[in-house]
Length: 104
Image (cartoon, rainbow, N blue to C red; front, top):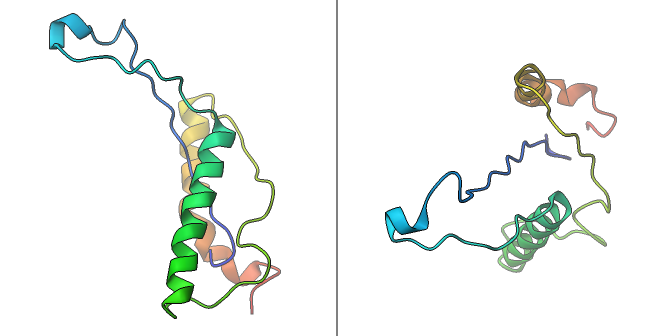
């Protein structure tokens, strides 16, 4: 959609049960898994920085105030059926652009 995005974030961890550091000779990263707000904040920050670079190169139009809205909607997908329903919604969402209140 030209005015918003949808996405699915899958957070996975590799724990001691999944892989043994002594078996692979690798070190297991013990850094905590980032929370959804940190992931979204990082995404917004990095995309804003890249957008500003493109504005300065006259690739993208300038924006007023901010690119991203302050909040976002999150939903925890708890089962496979829900995952497939949400994924299908995301795939079909661009087809509904003409119904959006901001469609020009």
